[in-house]
Length: 290
Image (cartoon, rainbow, N blue to C red; front, side):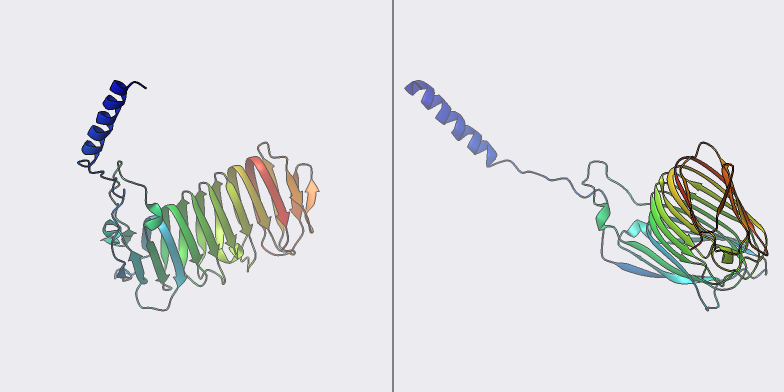
């Protein structure tokens, strides 16, 4: 390099260095503003009218825990969160009750920090008759619903993981049980204890365990419609059951006392029975007894 060129390069380096000394780099802030943990007490009394309570839980994201309880209130529990906008809200109109999370502000220019969000509800219900609708987004659900008095149950979940169990029989007949699930892992056990007339299941892509153990008190119908999914159905030996296969499903693995009849399956038993109508476009269906 010629001496003149060396001088020019040196001057440029000095100029850039002097400019850099005056530059302040501002990093993007978090997309969601978090704060210190907050614990709110939730208490919802039973309707004074004596009518069935119609309860809706609108949850969003986080962890939702439901258990039977012995408190006087229809619903009691806690909400733990660290985003102020997620504070629970209760809206009551007569016997219609909604418990919901607030909505938080998301800065599009911020850094994603979803893993820093804490939002957990831990709720218990008493034995007052109620209908329950749960609408949740990306959440983890731990539901123990045995020994409650649920007239109707509707659950709508997005990308989630759900463990639902009826450890003991529902105290009253449940006319309708509906579950819509997105990309999910779901385990539903003790379903005979739900005491439903109709169980309507709609699944996206996921892995689902439907275990119909428990005390089946009456004949019931189970309608299942799902996309690319792996579904395992357990019906204990001794419960009469018939499975009607619809759609293009070909991958069926049956074990135990299940008997193939054409493209359908059944098992012998005594007492109330289960009738399944299954429309599974693709994926795998496993039939077991335990």
